[in-house]
Length: 514
Image (cartoon, rainbow, N blue to C red; front, side, top):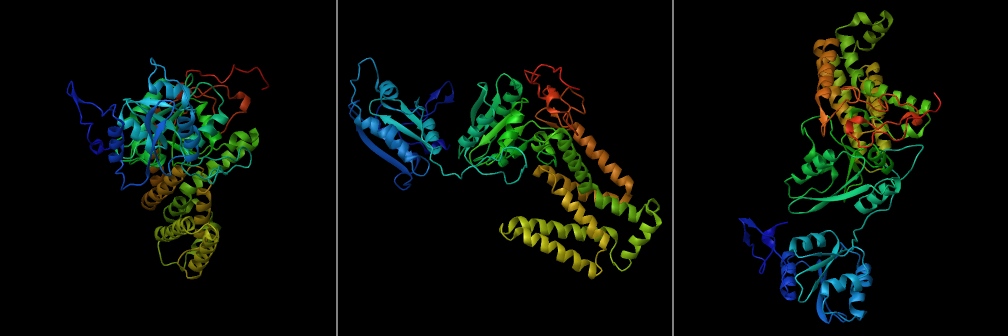
């Protein structure tokens, strides 16, 4: 908040060399004028000012709220109507603020404050404030009325088995969805304010007797150290608190599924929720979190592991297939069977470009089709994507610009990339594919091996909120071994030790079937 917007009556006092926050006075008109100036009233008509006479208090009061940010029906029924209609005898040893909180207002979220900053913060977040003549304290009540869509099915993280609920742009609704999954009295929901001009609230959710207190403290510290005018959503917040801004590897995970966020909570992770974000942020994360899906646990052991192995295979196909084609066709022809080598040579006989240019043309075309399918209207998006890919591929082959086998390779690469569930990891694989492609065109298999060695070495040294990225594999740590494949759910009795949970066992070690 720009403190210079606060006007007369709140000049900053000096005490011990530090500036004090502007405080309310006992003059109601002066307090109301200060709020009006902060919101540029009456030019800004969003601020609604209701001047009333409270019969029970025998005093003048003023109710202030922002149009479009509050639920006016709640204000009328829970605040204005009790103030006007209730008749009480004001005892001398009770001040008006105490009587109003305890005997008049029916809202369960009444709080007192003597700072103008708290009042303004409450207004912009959908609250209502009540100022009373002769009292140097104001009352704030939560009456949010922001418009939001209803809870729908996930748009990205689809599952065939499991819940079909997804987060929406309302932080209150998202917190409710998590509490629906985790019915634990130790589930904490703390609020940290971020942004200097547009103050937004970040909700930190964690299980108190499970999450590492040092982890919670570190997350709070990183958020509090953000210096920005506004941080509108979690996607922007992630870029502020991540450790390496230029890294291809993300340090946080965004999920739109309450059940997935809840499973991370039960392992000792911290969940962040913000208004205007239809996702929840999970910190810290590891490499294995990026290609696991909730459906892996919902399906039986054999089914879940089968689709997980298919997904891992797809990652390698999306990452390495074009590079292997370049390396084999350019440097290592002896590795191919003679018949296959002759078939590839025959298809490339009329192609005027080297293999590298040929692959780059097709990869660029596929990326253009993919981006166009995302940006154009939903109804015709899939049609344009399919038709565009078919027409481009067929026309390129008939024009002798690319070989038919390359169309198959690029199609397999593109389809495999769609199986990667996490969008950040998807982008990382797509960008790394081009890097490996260039090294393979210069050094063949040696270039591929060199690049993969560098990537693995980087991931070993990479950390997410102090947690090594490849743990519990490297460095090795105790866990339920839910990595490449998962054990049966009844064997997953250990929480991952890398989050340093206070309770390291989900339950006692079972004596069940083997």
